Amino acid sequence: QVQLQQSGAELVKPGSSVKISCKASGYTFTSYDMHWIKQQPGNGLEWIGWIYPGNGNTKYNQKFNGKATLTADKSSSTAYMQLSSLTSEDSAVYFCARDTMGITPYYFDYWGQGVMVTVSS
Amino acid sequence: DIQMTQSPASLSASLGETVSIECLASEGISNDLAWYQQKSGKSPQLLIYAASRLQDGVPSRFSGSGSGTRYSLKISGMQPEDEADYFCQQSYKYLYTFGAGTKLELK
Image (cartoon, rainbow over the protein chains, first blue to last red):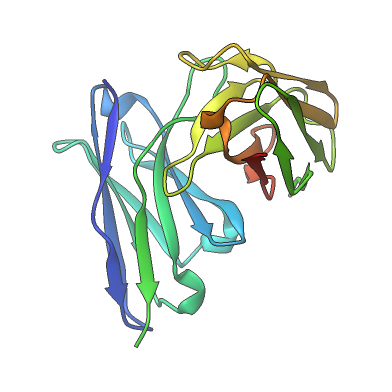
C-alpha cells in the first residue's frame, strides 16, 4: 500500500533553515510527482511546489521561490524540502502529497502525516 | 492566480441530513476540481476529482457536480464520521489553489 512517512516536528530559530523529509513506499517513486503543501491554522492550504523524482524537475509557487527547495533521493525513495531564512510566517504544518498523474493529474491522492515546523527564538 | 471561494464557512447537519458545500472559481476551470476531507489532526483525504469522479474507497454518499466556475460537493445522508473540514482545489492552472474550507459538524 502507498505510504508517505514524514520526519518529525521541528522547533527552529528565526533566520535558520530546516530540511524535512518524506519517505515513499508501496509504489514506483520515480514515476509520480511529489507535491508539498503548507497549512497554517485559519489560513487553509497553500501549494508550495512539486518535484518529479524521475529526473529532478521542479516547479514552484512563485511565492516560495528562495524560501523552499525541493530535492529527491531515488536510492532511498525520499523527497525533501528545505526551508530557509525562517520567520514566524513559516510556522505551519507541511505535507508531502503524491500526484494522481495519468489523465487526471495535479490532484493529491496520498498524503504524508504532516510535519509541524515552529519558528521561535 | 485562480481564487477559490468556498461556502459556507461552517455548517451543522443532523444525522441523515443531505449537505451541500459550494466552490466558486474566479474563472472557468473546466471541471478540473477536487474535494478533500480533513479530520481533526489528520491529513487531507481525496474524495472527488475531475469535479465528479469518486476516489476509490470513498463512500457513495459523497458526490460532486458543477461546471464552469461553480462546483458543489454533496453528502447524501450525514454520518458521524463525516464531521470534518472540507476543501476544494483547482488543478486547471498553475498554481494550484484551494478554497478556505468548510467546517462540517454533526448537530
